[in-house]
Image (cartoon, rainbow, N blue to C red; front, side, top):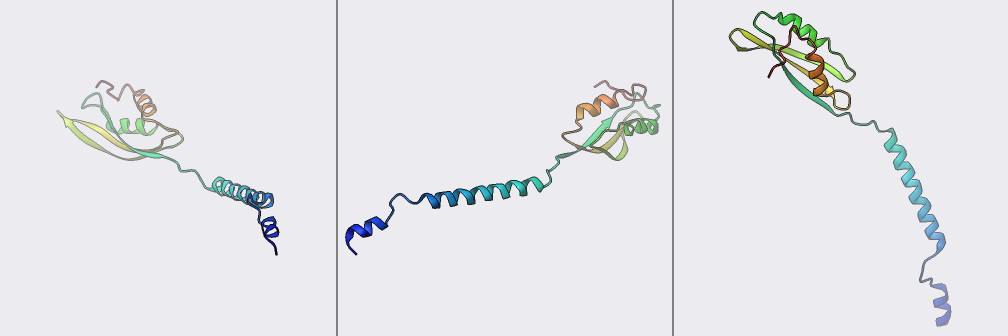
Length: 125
């Protein structure tokens, strides 16, 4: 073999066939990744909220107050446990927990719905 023949067999710039094959493999991998990702369920962000609901006075029917609060229903809202917490002068507030899906329910919505029960809920401060 002479020197010219060796250099003719050696391709300094690579082959177009190899580039096309590498590009095809890359496309297949991207497609497989996209399909895998599409099948994976999306994470749902949730928050746990503890609400303090103040009654008008010590004569407010706390059972009815809790019924009113729990009557607030929305997709992504789940009511939890509740208890009465002493505030002072014989008045107790309702402390109630809930879990919400962040994209569907917010604290503003909950506050707005609960304060509609004007006969039971004290909305001042």
